[in-house]
Length: 217
Image (cartoon, rainbow, N blue to C red; front, side):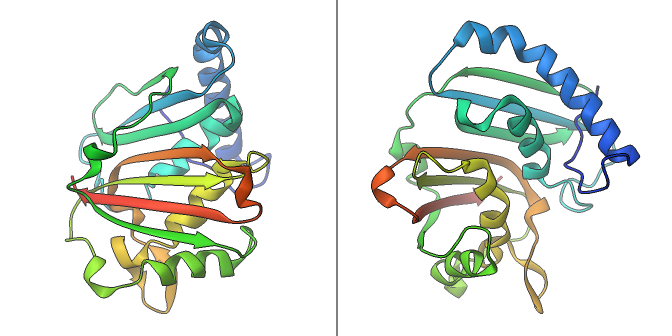
């Protein structure tokens, strides 16, 4: 069954029904593996195969919109990292395993930026705080496919998966924007590999720290 994008349509819409069937399928595929791994920080990897001829950099195939519904269904609290890629092909896969602490040196050659937010994560102000802190003009990545990693530090009470989309929407200075009049209409569909990481830090309270690394894919 092919992966499905997140849907914001009515519950009875065909897109929602198809998404529900797909998520049921993923839940069944991963049920035994999740039970085997039990409690602890896990990592999920989703490889999305799109039909031959698909333009991977245009058309709305945003990786976070493939990943978010899967993590939401399985429970975002299980996961300390989530990885997703897209390429042309016929077989999509999902894998779950223990999360492994990353070696910072692996990202040493990547471009990077950091931000810290104080606004409510449900507001445009939250996106704006991130955008303003990563805004220097020389950060714009060359045109073409990108690999991006985002790291979030936040209190344990937060559903960290809710942070993904608004944070990515704020990356216009890195990935570019479709329309300069709409600064959060980012060209994030040119991200072909995406990794998202979580660190729990209750001392942050309502603040969220966001780190972003990127390079041409």
